[in-house]
Image (tube, rainbow, N blue to C red; front, top):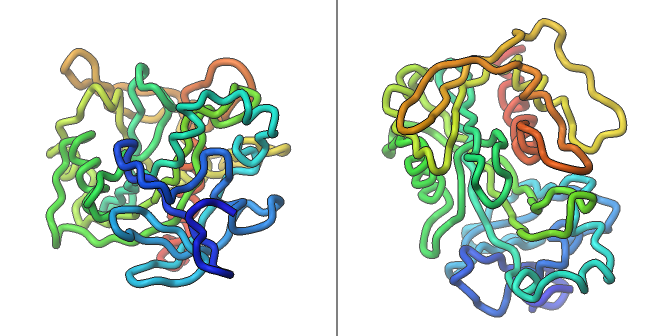
Length: 305
């Protein structure tokens, strides 16, 4: 059991809000968060989560202000498969860092399109991958406030209270590199996925964009048909899931370079790429994003029947 599970018969972990916040009760880098709560063969479970004294608390019992939500990891999660011998090779600064917490915002327009951004190529983790806007939660921030701040910092879009509705989708255990075959873990996160519903269409929202090129190299709005095929390309799966055969050949994106934005296209197949088990990564949609998209598609099901 991790440090932080201090109540008898109650399992819980505290996750760092930032590397500066070094309270002793926190999740251990070398222990999978999902694995802490259930058998190692399981990769998902329902937990209770929320902010507790400037820490993000995950527990198997409800507590004041908590929400019950799904916590998921990929079956190839490096922390899940990390051997004792491999753990011994981790640098002390990596082992001692613990688990950070971040937030990612799935922004849905009135036209049921979702915003994805391509991370800049020189970022230290997950460069050049397509993800929703997001980042670390700062001490003292609420989850929604952190999501809105990250959305504004990365895209320039400022959403005020009353301009949207929202819900928490799920938690995702994220590790970089994403597979042990690509190297020993360097960073370990729990990502809180939030769904924001805007009454504006994507053209209206995009008119207010002022993206940060240091964080974002491109952005696009994808419709449910394309996103369903993206979500079907499961990383690490032995068998390729069936994708729609009537997808467009290219996707229109807005690319940022040297302070200017231009509209261009890239092959739809780029969004259907899967994580390679070895070597350099490829431009693709991140595994956690695919998980969040699947949950988002479930929210659309009652509206489309």
